[in-house]
Image 1 (cartoon, rainbow, N blue to C red):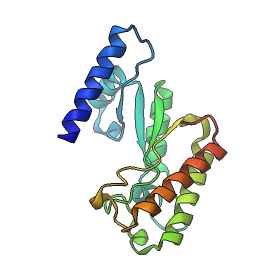
Image 2 (cartoon, helix red, strand yellow; image 1 turned 60 degrees about the horizontal axis):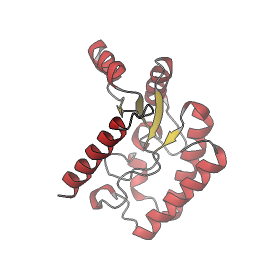
Image 3 (cartoon, one colour; image 1 turned 180 degrees about the vertical axis):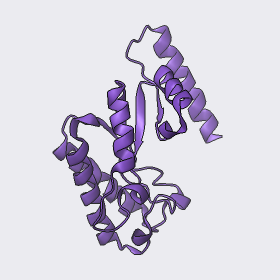
Length: 173
């Protein structure tokens, strides 16, 4: 019911914006499927103004001290070269699918450090090419909390990421 209500509200707001003559309405989607071929890329190019690039821990942090930006670079580079805005999606997602195996036993203090490293490395690497940062995905969802943090801890991490993003990239949103 909640999802239906959210979608109905979104439909109504989009319709209002279109009817009011809004020219700044943008549509986006995950751009993770660029390797699926030309048909995917052509549809994405035709339909989307914004593309979400993958920043999942399992892709970007295969080991504690190792960053691997290859998959993210490919998506960001393609989006930028095609004039699309880039959304980093997401900086924090603690779902078991999103975690690198080495992360599964992290304490809160250790996870806090990893999150800070992730934010600093991502902003340093992508700078102004990414203007929209999804700070945290599904913090309230029980199955997306693979580290079993409390709500207060998740809120603390969200606030930390927000402060760090604003400090490192004040123009981001």
